[in-house]
Image (cartoon, rainbow, N blue to C red; front, side):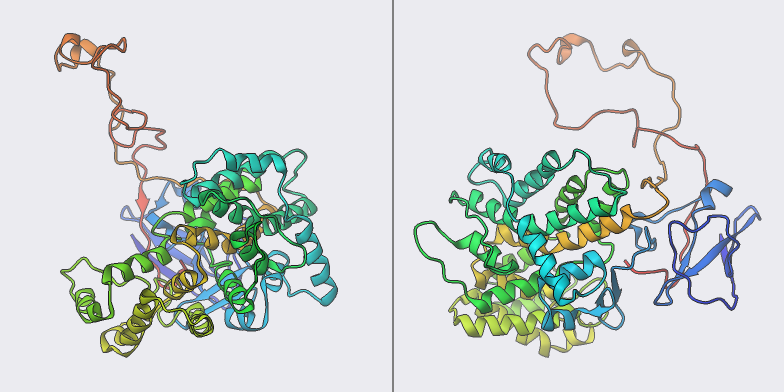
Length: 504
C-alpha cells in the first residue's frame, strides 16, 4: 500500500475520543491499496506537534486493519498528564519538568498535580494531606488477607492480591462517571498503597504489621511502616526519606507504558478501579517492565568485583556474547534520561551521607565511572539510567531486592489512578478491543474420534480417569493455531509506517 499526505494550513489539533468520527479533516493522508482503492484518513497533531493518523474509521469503512504488534506506532488514547520528549531528554508532568518537581516539590505536590491537574495552593495542600491521611488505614478484615500468604511469598504476589481485594471493600454504589466518586477512589489509592506495600513487606518477612502515623509524611511513613518494630524506637533518617520520596516521584508516571496501558484497558470495561490498579501491578511485575532495577543488582553480583569490570565491559561490547550491562540506556530517550540525572545526584548524596561500606555499591560506582568515560558508551549514548541508580539506592536504604518492584508500584500507582480517572471522564465510552491478524486454520469438518487414528483406548490413557490419565499443564484446547473467535475471514490487513507518529 502507498500513503501520500495532503497538507493544509491547520493549527495543531489534539486527538480526543469524543471527536466526531465523521468530521471533515483539515488535513488528510491518502492510502492507496494494491487493488487501486484509495481512502483518506485524517491527520491530527498533538500539543507538541507530533503527527497522528486517525484510523478509527479505517476498518468500519474499508474492512482493512493496521498491524502493529506491541503498539509501537499506535496512540491508544489522548492524554494531558505526561509528556516524553525522547530526542531531547525531557519528561513533563502536566507541563512541569520532572527535574524541577523532584528538586522543589514532594509527593503531595506530585500526587495533586497528576490527580487534579495543578500544583496545590497552601489551602489545597492542607486539604489534600488531610484527605490522604484519612485513607491511610485499611479495613481490619483486609489485613486477614495477609495472613493467608506463606511467609516466603513474593511481596508483589501479595500486592497484586490485596490491591485487587480492595474492590471487595469499596464497590457498592461506585459510579465511575461521577467525578466525586473518581476523586475518592484516587485519594484512597494514594493513601493506602504505602500501607499495603509495607504490610506486604512485613508479611514476606514474618514480622508484625506496623500502622501508619499521622505525624509523618508520605515517604517517612513508608520507611517507618517497613522497618519499625514494636519492640524498639525507630529513628527516621531525613536524607533516606527524601531519597525514597524522590524515587517515588520519578516513577509516578511515564506515558502509556505496559502497566499504564493495562490499567486503561481494564478500566475501559468499567471494572472497579482497584481491580484495574491490581492489573497494572501484575503487568509491572514482569521482568521486562518493573524488574529492571532488580536486574541491575543481579548483574553487579555476577560481575563480582571491581577487577572484573574491564572484562565484563568488553563482553558487553561483544555482539556474540549474551552478557548485557543492565541499567544503561533507555528505549525512549535518545540522550540521558532526565530522571537518571536526578537519581544520580540523589544516589551519591545518599551514599556519602550513610557512609556505607558495601562492596557491591563500590562496584556500582566504579562501573558508572568506567561507562561514563568509555567512548563506546558515550558514542551510543548508553548512559546509566534511572533503574541503575534506583537499584543502588534501594540497596543502600536496606530495601531487599524482592521489594524493588513493590516500591516502584507505590510510586506508579499515582499515575495509574490518574490515567484511569482521565479515561473514565471521557464523554464517549469505548471498550478496548484490538483486532488480530488470524493465521490459524479456516473452517474444517469435525473428525469423529474413530477416524483420527492413533491407536485404541487400551494403548494409552483412559477417558474415565483411570491410570494413565495425565495433565500436561497446558491451557484449554482448540482446533489449530489461535483457535477462537474468527472475524471477517480473509480481511486485508495494512501495515502503515509513518515517521513521528507519537511516542511509545
